[in-house]
Length: 249
Image (cartoon, rainbow, N blue to C red; front, side, top):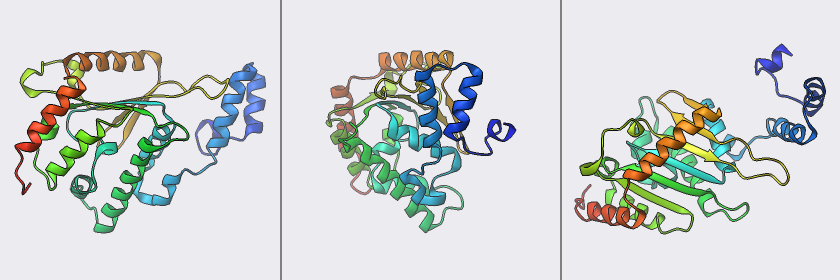
């Protein structure tokens, strides 16, 4: 038990059954827990990328692939699911100690993750993104191509990209660090996994799923929607910034 509770060993479905008997867990939720126990033994496709996937990021890649909706707020960088190869290489290559091979592997992982937006079975998740305008104003190689990629991505069914313009951005607590809210689909007759909030730092990440925590971030998202341009006006602003960018950026 102490090994299970300490996360030192994976959980067998037999163990789940026994503990559900002791704790009086109902049959429906018991099946959900047994499915999760089976999933802990299965390696996802991202394991092929080895050290390009930090241990604290592995869980997110799995959650992202299972989600039915992703709501992402980014105050500093273009989200990984919308990055072109050149932009991703610039960002990832700026990390201390990153070798050329490590950068190549990390970029390949990032581009592989983007395939889920074109997925048909199961249906691709809805992606709703809110960015600060400052994210678009930086200087990096291939800037015009990256901005055009954002414009085209915003035209894909199921993808929404909105921008908070710098000139009208208010001072507000909801404008703090970036986050992703992940919603999950029901699995047949089983209830969906709880909505989870992902918040990343330079060396780790937080995964929050308590109702009060999720509610706080949901309120922040609603406030961000209130100050962001709608998708067509956001696309127009991105195009304006693109046209004002130097060909040599």
